[in-house]
Length: 351
Image (tube, rainbow, N blue to C red; front, top):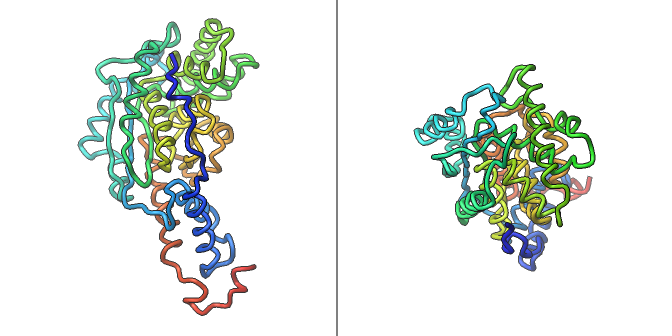
């Protein structure tokens, strides 16, 4: 059940306003007292903001972080180091200002909103049956879309015990149709919250068997988008469906996005399959400590991650830290002196 609105054309990256903003930003960068391109990713960030905000200089007056939470029926298979009750407990901690994401957002000057998705229930155990009906998945997707509000920058994250298993199953089904399920499950399944080697082997077996069940029920699908939608509702989670909806909505509204860790990027992979231009406005905040993350980022084609901090927390925590880097980029772009202001020989800028 794919809504036509999912597949409708989005505005191109370089609208006339975006092109003007990019030209102005490039001219400003070339005038600053530094060798050309010497600030590396910071310059890339500033240009990205200018294009998607369609203004130069870009602004960071309103930064919003959204965390979607959902319970996973696959936890019945004992694939996590933590019980599923932790999802609900952590949402309460978020709301009581007690988690890492609360204080990272405070420090980064970002608002924070928490969105439990279908929180009174859990997805089905996708080892044996689809995680969600198409109708339920569509409702979760729409909840994510509705959560997107106008802002200069959006950081997206998740909370859901069991969702690295769901992410691994989705990625295995999306990318490894022509290889044995066991090999692909090995590639995409990691220790998540830190399970033992024995539990990790079991987790990979669960992913392998789940994807085999999925493939047996979907021997042929008419399009990449149709298959991606099937992957999302059969192997995904409420919060991952919501993230998918939020990303497509942010793209339609030209809001720059910071993607958080592995489950968030797995949802982004689905969004890209649903709409090839879905992630053009996205930057990857960090490289998480999860097997398969580097390969996934290459497939998303959003550039190299801004940070590598060996994080695997989720909660949009890596994205919140990356907000500080984005602020640093804009601070340099707007506050540095030009060569003319500083009286510096412009040959420096041509080295």
